[in-house]
Image (cartoon, rainbow over all chains, first blue to last red; front, side):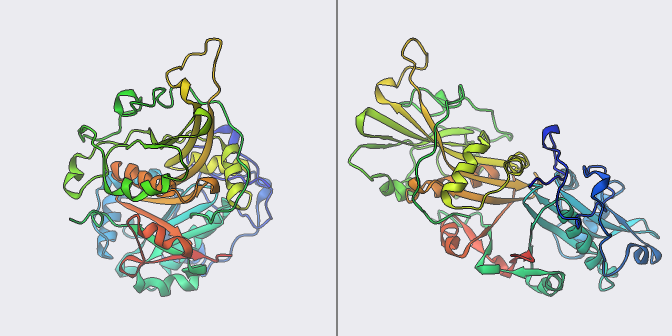
Amino acid sequence: MFLGGTISTPPASLRLRSTLNPQNAVTQSSSQATFPAAMQRKPPSYSISDEDLESRGFLLRRTSEGLNLDQLNSVFVAVGFPRRDTAKIEVALQHTDALLWVEYEKTRRPVAFARATGDGVFNAIIWDVVVDPSFQSCGLGKAVMERLIEDLQAKGICNIALYSEPRVLGFYRPLGFVSDPDGIKGMVFIRKQRNKK
Amino acid sequence: MLLIPISSSSSSSISPPPNSYPSNHHSLFFSNLTFPIQHGSRKLKTLRLRANFWESIRSGFVKNNNSTQLVEPPSIVNDEEEETEPLLPVEFTLVERNLEDGLVEEIIFSSGGEIDVYDLQGLCDKVGWPRRPLVKLAAALKNSYMVATLHSVMKSSSDSDSSEGGNGQKQQEKKLIGMARATSDHAFNATIWDVLVDPEYQGQGLGKALVEKLVRALLQRDIGNISLFADSQVVDFYQNLGFEADPEGIKGMFWYPK
């Protein structure tokens, strides 16, 4: 069976119509979607609806347009990530399969963010899931994750993974994430550990 | 994820693309290789033969009575040399061995991503992976930041200098025997997927070489975080290559895995 979807540099020959089950919704506002209108499905049910969020002053964004990278960097730092070169962040965002952020209407600043990279058809990894500490514990992280997962699924990506710090395993589990399924281990290359003299 | 060996027949050959590898296999270092210059300002060092890594897998090559020549690619870096590490060429020969009836086999590594999707599907079949649609395979490859391949090239040893056709144009059999790919955001993170080696070529250190070279190429592009998900039976394999499971307690998680 064929699956259509958004890929980063889609050649014309690879744009296919989706013949998948009707649960593939085209809910994203991104202009990269290539699904025909006939493939609409019922809107997904989120823990907090878009309208609810909007009524509280939180606007959902699915592109990096309008995203101030210095402000995003500040949110990263506020949650304990290293401050990174904004030029590199920009490169990373250009090569990201899907991203979602929440803009706080009052300040126009990002208060929640998550992005996913991958090959656009089989696998996606979610990175940089952050919520500004001042806005935590009111459902924004969950809102971002639920929608990001939905967006990835809409592209036909079935394998969605991430690396979780131990203190937030409890955040990801209720969202449906399982650690080490079947004994699969996440591994990271450690530099400078080889060739010890 | 590396697969457990199962036996199967060999796949068909394809004719080699022009200029993709040196024709004179006796001087296989930089002088005969054509490759795009990598980004970055690291200066090239003169090549030196390496010890540890190649010695550790050298024993794996002495499988038959025929002589096997190891052709060392650019050296594996020491900690103190990391600043001026020679850039990996896109394509180079990993090993060369003399077989019976005058045949010579070269195993060629390439990070250039030249791969026939039909060959890849055949290789996935050989290792027993479930079939994936060709179009999706092609898309996945295209969307990957780096695709590393191992090809086996068979040629007649009397043929070593000929690259022209003439009336005796020798067919050089080139076969895909391994692949690994990495996705990345081009800035911070890369994740390695789909590491596989033809069962007929397993147990010789080729999988290790494949991953090691892929990691090296990623590091040379300043990708600081290289990760992967390893099936439980290959965790040791990756540990030996410098990967650590659950570093600082960070866990790999999957969304509703099947």
